[in-house]
Image 1 (cartoon, helix red, strand yellow):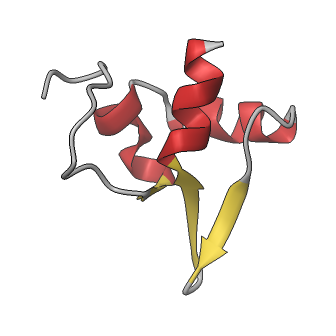
Image 2 (tube, one colour):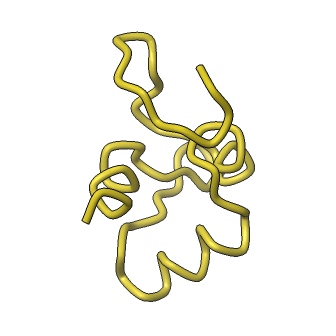
Length: 63
């Protein structure tokens, strides 16, 4: 998988940690939090870790 480019694959994660945004989606940590604050997508807490749903972020990127 090319860094910063989303490609469909069955092995992709459903949820990604905020710090993985750069590797998976090409978004910095600050951008993820900024866009979540603008209600572009939601940040979830899972076992005390902040995560985003990859499909929500991808839908926002494609819009």
